[in-house]
Length: 354
Image (tube, rainbow, N blue to C red; front, side, top):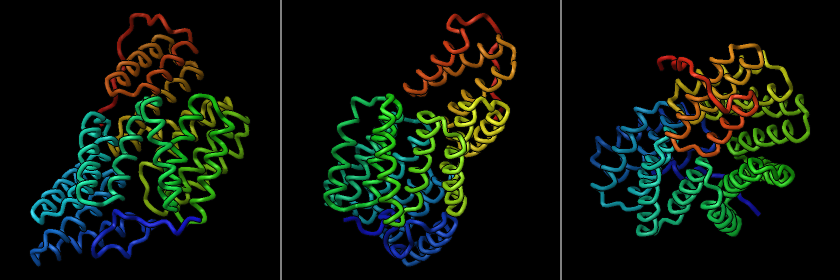
């Protein structure tokens, strides 16, 4: 039913790269081909090679380089008059904006990418851009607005037999079910995603599906050891492919699993590790979630009540400012958990300098 997963963002001279190629390999090959295209005066090829460079930098958490690379790719595509390549560059830029927590910019760039993809006759970049819009809304917690789009994209991916996109859509819908308490449905969808990803050799998608399964196994079944085993399996892939963001989220989930098990000291260590990793790649959503887990763990370990109140109050402001509705609700529940809905006056705990 589904073919082998492929990476449409690796284009031009880089189509031989696998969806499972390590990001350091992608970056090296992309830079080599980009330099060759620029020397030869071939802007269309420079745009396509530059896209792979931008994506490798983004996934490695090298935000500044990724920002420069996608913009250079867009300029080269515009010079070549290649509408589809322009769309791909905008997709990369929009994805980077979402990763950085700049959701308004992400919406704008991804919407333009979808429009240009349709105009340029590239159904894949149009689908990826719509998927990016759906994921942006989901991350912000606007499930009602993007739930139907997720379902539409899932149906299209199934119809075309696109394993990678099917896995993405299943995982997104599963995450929404998990966050709204439909654990059995979430588990079934994460399980299906893991199976499709494994058969299609989509290691990145498989790692994310395992993380989702670990979360449900932990929160629904209380099976801490199985959850940790699933995360351990996923971590091997994250390390092999140098997936910085996925690895940080894996470590944050380890903290969640251990916190639910009452192993607060271990949870604290993993939240601290994830927090450092998210700060290193400038990913504000992961940083906020790690800070929340760390604050809760420290509170359970006897941290001063006023410090916990100040930290949660600061997190509430941070998540509201970024536009993370679901995370904002999680902070509110944490304040209720520790009886801190009426926040006392206390000095705000300052974040460490990044």
